[in-house]
Amino acid sequence: MHFTYVDSAWSGGVAISPNSRFLYVSSFKNVYQYDLWAEDIPASKDTVAVWDGFMVPPVFATTFFLMQLGPDGKIYINSNNAVPYLHVINNPDLPGDSCDVCQHCVALPSWNSFSLPNFPNYRLGHLQGSPCDTLRQPPTAAFGYEQAGAELRFADSSYHDIRSWHWDFGDGQTDTVPSPVYMYDSTGLYQVCLTVANPRGEDMVCEEVAVVVSGKAEVGRRKWGVQVYPGLFRERFAVLLPEGWQPQEARLLLYDGLGRRVLSQRLRPGANEVAAERLSAGVYFYVVEESGMVVARGRVVKQ
Image (cartoon, rainbow, N blue to C red; front, side, top):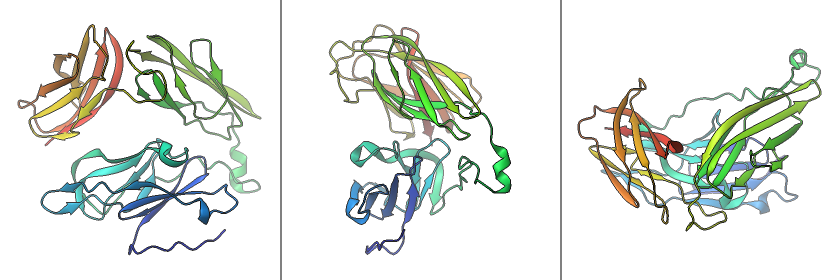
């Protein structure tokens, strides 16, 4: 397969989605997506991101440069400048804007210039007829997920020649696609199970997920999850609860790299300022709970 890509950028990056369908090409101010399953691949070109103009003082632009598929199934993009951020394509298996290119969303603990870690694709499987063909094994089930209110976007990360998937969302509903998006109807703690199979066997993994549904939240695909920003801060950062959510017992818990709790703060509707002047510089991990259920988690970096 060969096609000509014409652009004025003097360099860029490429990456392919985990499901092998979409090719991504970065070009300084744009990220393009090509559908490799289309009859006319060049004609399938779609601009899925345009640089938002974000600059790191004094003059360093967070434009798009190299791309790398990570072990978590996301595609990471660095910049052709020295900046403390990476861009990320959260759902590279999905077409168009659904792939969710999040600009400068990954805050790094230090400045990075031009480089990206190298993650070999360990999940290519065996090549039939090669010495590696002896490695055929039963499957190993694994998955991750991202949560935005009652909507959960599941990502299959199972390996060893997966042929079929069966999801049980814990509320009586099921699905058989590799990476489903599911909307829960009511607040609760659900046990989600994924069963995968190949000709040599099957495997199942389960995980409990906490879902909080706001009565005033729009039912549909709108994201209304907890926001924590900025990811890189000096003295304070903010926790924004989604519009319409009236928390009963919402709380922010902050942990250091050793797992020690260093901060606990009650959260109220809307924006909450978190004072962290006394904390040492470093990476911290946050958990947002509502009545004991985890509704958001992530990390922030103090300079």
